[in-house]
Length: 93
Image (cartoon, rainbow, N blue to C red; front, side):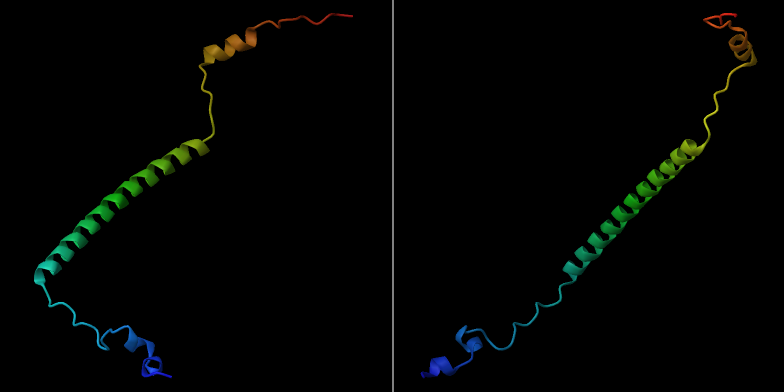
């Protein structure tokens, strides 16, 4: 076998054994990250408030739906309904 076949595969890719050092600390990048984090929190708070408002509205609609339906008629209307003659009279035997 040749020497090239005996070497591990990592050596064949010609990559260094140690990774490149991390980039130096840049405070400007930190400021941008903090600003974006603040914007995300504001957006989350806005969505949360909107969600609570929709939930409250839904709860009120459910309460209305659960209430029994009461057909309110004035006493005059009730008397009129009772005094109506039947449409067909029963035959007497």
